[in-house]
Length: 65
Image 1 (tube, helix red, strand yellow):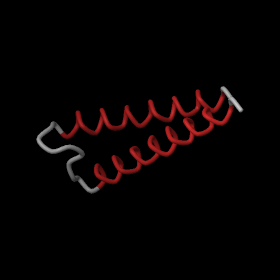
Image 2 (tube, one colour):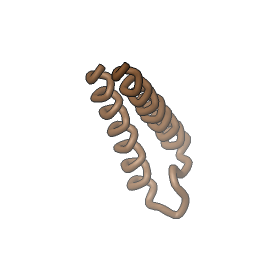
Image 3 (tube, helix red, strand yellow):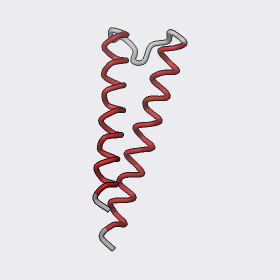
């Protein structure tokens, strides 16, 4: 029963991280702002880093199963 929450949490982190990376890459490819009124390079870098961190957390959660 203890693996259920770890699987759920890992899946949530994986979906969020993958979605954020896809969204950020799409916005950068179209040369659209990732965040309004922010430096484009900084916002893309921060969003990409957040996506990677979410995927790392997903992997960590799923290794605890």
